Every structure is written in C-alpha cells, then in structure tokens.
Image (cartoon, rainbow, N blue to C red):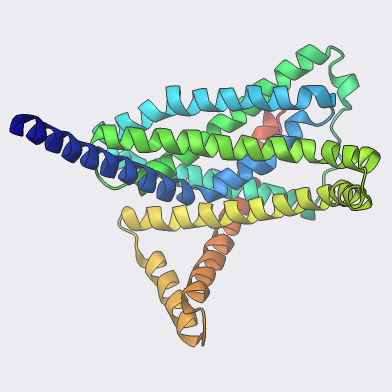
Length: 316
C-alpha cells in the first residue's frame, strides 16, 4: 500500500512539473506572439482585399483556404527552418530579423508613399481581369498565401528571438502555439471583418427591434471607416516594429550607439512626465523607431521601386 502511495506521489509530482512546463510554454508563446504585433496587424489589414469582389457565399471559404495555407507555411515550413537556424546558425537570426524589419519598413513606407503620391494606375476590374471566377479565386488565394509566407516568416523569426534559451522541444512547442494562436486570431478577425457588413445589412433589413436595425445601419456605415483605421494602425505598427528591429539588430551586431541614444531620450522624456512615466518612455521610443523605420522605408521604396519596374512588376 505504501508503495502505491509513493507511486501516486511521484505521478502527482510529475503532473505538477508537466503542468508548470505547459504554463511556461503558453506564457512564453504569448510573450513571443506579442513581439510580432506589427506583422500580425499588417496581416489582418492586408488579407481582406483578397476577398474583395467575390460573391458573399465565397468570402468565408476563401478566408478558410488562406488560413489553411498560413498554418502550412508556419508549421510545416517555417517552424522547422527556425529551429534549425536556432540550433546550427544562431548568428544568422539577427541579420534575418533585420531583413524582415526592412521589409516591414518598406511595406509601411510604400503605403504612405501611395497615399501622398497616388498612382494613376488603377487595377483592372475583376470581370475583365479573369472571366472564370474559379480561376480568379485560385489566383487570389495563391497570391494571399505567398504574401502570408513573407509575413509569417517575420512573425516566426520575431517570436523565436523573443523566446528564452531552452531545449528544442520547448521552443518548438512555444513556436507552434504562436503559429496556431496568431493564425486563429488573424483569420478569425478577417472573417469577422469581411462578413460584418453582411451581418449589418441583415440586421437592418430583418431586425424586429428598432435598436437592432439601428445597430445594423451603424455597422454598415462604420465598416469603411474601420477598415481605414485598421490600415492606418497596421501601417504605424509596421514602421514602429520594423524600425525597432533594425535598431536592436544593429545593437546585437555591435553597433549599439543608436539604441543607447534612443533609450536616453526615452528616459529623459519619461522623467519629465508627472504621471504614466513608463508609457511616456515607451511612446517616445516607439515614435523614434517609427520615424527611423519610415526614413529607411522611403529609401527602400526609392531603390526597389525602379528595380521592380524594370521587370514590369509593382513593388507590392
């Protein structure tokens, strides 16, 4: 009997250790996922355009197909690649992060560039571009998954860099949680966004109560403004995260002067704030990182745009 009790005590101890490990994995995954905020917001802001122009009945299936492609990108391709890099070439992670940060700066600056100097080129109407709806859907889904691959690579690399040093199984589990959690969050949000106007319209037409119809009209009227706000927030997040990645990457490669300068300014501003000093310091650093990201992004737009034009492609 005493042996059975001892065995049960051992099982309970193992369960506690396993539970703590799961808690650690979940906690580190959440922290790592938060570091990838800029790419995540951009992913949510970019994806709705891929269902624009399709029949409402096809919108959610298209989002579902893109989400499945995103999971494949993250779990089957990017997660093993990230773990291999961490195990055999950790020195390559900061340059790769900086490359991804430069991409975020380029994407954010390109959006602002087009806002300031809109192009006269207009996209061809969908019915003229491709007459076969099924073929058009395949084309749009393939394009969305390619774009997702770039953003997912950045998300996974940022998440990996935010994880503490641990065994490969812990890091793999945390990255898998990040991949699944972010994909659900992004494409669940996209599904809600693309169907919100349909829900609002249904509430307006079929709502039994006046307040229901009023809410429906509010949703329909508010969605265009919400999408614009989402685009603005996504652009700002890209520039901030991209700039901070570049600054931190330079510090990791031995050029820490710029990071120290920004930190000193942030501390000085925080010292002047009578309340919310932490927020004031964080906001100062985010603004400076964003300005640096915008400047780098404009340089990349000026360089990459003409190069892509030589091949008859847009920079997007």
